[in-house]
Image (cartoon, rainbow, N blue to C red):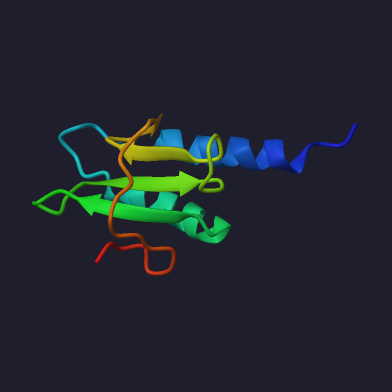
Length: 100
């Protein structure tokens, strides 16, 4: 039986995600940087939304075609990936990973 490389990759990503210490009193920027790297590698459009203090951030990403039933918006906030029907952000980035 041959191992499924997609499953192995998913397990690797999930293992890294749950290892980040994103307790609410701490910065989540290491997690955000990691997720941005994953999104960038896949060519996914995303926006980083930093807090005013700059010690935390959220990510808003859109995956799938921009058509009825084809868009899966999600966000990462406080260490959780949340599928949600959120408003599309106005600034996006696929290269530098920072909203302007």
